[in-house]
Length: 134
Image 1 (cartoon, rainbow, N blue to C red):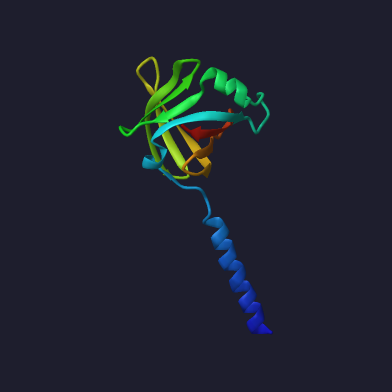
Image 2 (tube, rainbow, N blue to C red):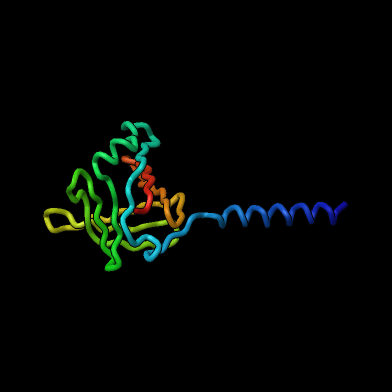
């Protein structure tokens, strides 16, 4: 009976470790290229979600380049640009602001494959973006 209990407990911990280790992981090389936004959600419902048709109309995308730069496009203009690094479940962005200063923030990756990525910002203006690789 005691052996059976220990076996069940061990199996439980193995399963728990497996589940906890299944977080998505990204690296810079896996991000290179242009990613078209197909969905923007606001989990806190403080703003309306943005549908795929509007995102396509606006040309919403993010492009990651081999020189570690990024640019977020909206309505044919660069909405944001700067440098990035990727490690594990986080993409760290250092945005160049118009006054010459920089702002640092992170995208937290919740889903990642070779062709689709979902990331979100944390804080008061939480947004979840799903994008597909061109």
